[in-house]
Length: 173
Image 1 (cartoon, rainbow, N blue to C red):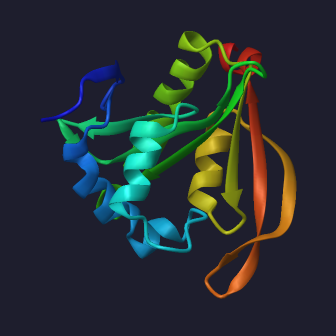
Image 2: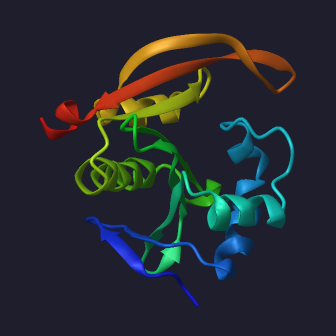
């Protein structure tokens, strides 16, 4: 059974995640090409996924779907209601990349963050070698706010992580 549609864009619908989606999320979330872009050095287990989706009250997750079929995963996490900010993450399945889905899914999730949740700021972290994610963030108006030097161990080396931020007023413009 698929989750309920939550937000609709031009090509994608963001819908809620159900347990039936775990196979898709585990298969693609554990894809080495996807993990290389995220700080997940170890495989994600079903229990890890369930804890994030079902138990983490500081996060909200969506499956971006094209014609009813999931193409990736987009989520807000570390939602701080008293501090009015959250962090965003997104990945698109390897066989669906290059179609602009990450931009559209992130855009829809940002609409939810600012319009529905009333957040003041959304943060994003990207490995410096992840040009595609950097391009998505810059296209959507995120500003580079800093660099965490040699923050994460990726592909046999410590890599810098770039910090980006987007304010509600910038999104409204």
